Amino acid sequence: MQTMHTLKNIGCAATCALLWMGLTLGNVRAENGVMADNAARIDWDAIEILDIETAQRIGLLQNPNLRAASERVNQARERVRQAQAAYWPTVDTEGSWRREEISNNQRKQRVITGGETVRAGSDDDSTNIYRVEMITTWTVFDGFRRHYDNARARFGEEENLASLKEARRLLLSSIADNYYVAQLAMENIRIADADEEFNTRQLEEARARMRVGTGSLSDVLNFEVQVNAARSARNGFERDYRLAMIGLAALMGIPDAGLPDSLKLSPLKPETDKDLAMPPDTENIDYALEHRTDIQRDQSIVNQADAGVGIARARYWPALEFRASVDGEQKNSVDYEKDDFGSTVGLFLSYPLFTGGERRSRLAEAKYIKNEAEDNLDATRIGVASDVREAIANVVTAQRELLLQQNNAELVKRNRDLVDKEYNAGQASLVRLNEAQRDLNQATSQLALARVGLRQTWKNLNVATGRILQPFEAP
Image 1: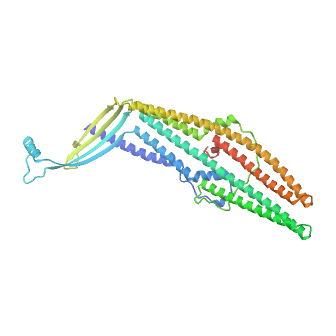
Image 2 (image 1 turned 30 degrees about the vertical axis):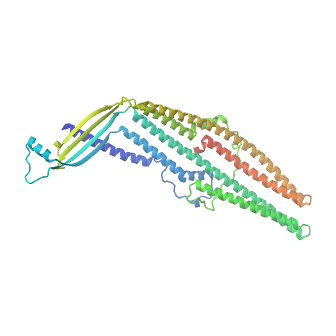
Image 3 (image 1 turned 45 degrees about the horizontal axis):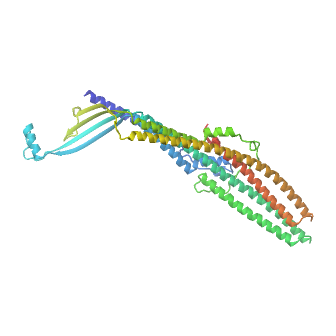
């Protein structure tokens, strides 16, 4: 019975080890969660000016699509732990009860062969049989399948992590786009206000001239029309601003997709020398090929496919399994004693000699999957390089456009001021003044668009290279 006691100790030790692992992994899962429920309530009263980085940080915390992506990472992490469990033995317990009733012929045979005595006045020949068993199974060797299963699970976790980072990259880009659209609307509102102010001043002067008999009613009516046109334009730009803010709030994960009316955005800052510097091609492409999250994701898919080839090859190896069990059986009683238990210990070797070509086909399929993943990775790398080059070309174009619009806005402003003076001196017509003012509105709008466009092209370059993630990554 020493074997039985040994197996009992093995079973208890294995059970305790599994319990300890469960508690430990539970703590690790709580500590290493990709994104805890830390989207705390935002104190909007403490935020007077919402800058773009703050908007992006709030979006990273609260966007529900991003939280869903983080849950997929947690799922992948649990699959890694499931794969790791294959290295441990399993301990199972079984219990059964069955009731047997023998036939009259079997009863007579027992009496004849065994000398049993039939109890007088009783026809009950039923027996209750109780059985308990504890089985320990441990895979000693499986052709390295567990190794490749673990590798594939780890690479799957890396793929989901890369996908999460990719989702963060795209979310940061979308938040920036909406922020810049709102900033452009703010600039256009400012331009409309300036237009209204100019025409209001002209209207007051026209009314003054008409009162002293040197002006005409047509001039007054003209400037009234221009003031209304400026107010109408402002109304449209305010609509654009509100829509942009709604989109921004949705991307930030604000529950009702609404930001406080008192919240203001940062105004456009003056361009720096860095904004007007030429971005280097090679440096940006090299950085993108190393840091772009979609490349990292596709590389993880290739690694998973490679592990799949190893899993398919494992079928060509024999499998060796250790099994040990302790079992006991009692009739008409559940009062077990040590003499009621028996034990079994064994090593079992299995090797499929012929599978009808299934192993060969599975291995070929796994290799084709790997080839496909490698081709997709090559395509992604080419696409990333193309994205970077296009983004650089757009930055250069935006820089030239900005310089052109700055010069043009200065010229148009000087011309409008000259026409304004000539009109007040009676040397220019009202039509010419209206044209000069419209030209100024258009030039200043084009300048605002060029300024925002330059920032968007730089943002697109940072998105293409993956640098947009840098300010938000843990050191």
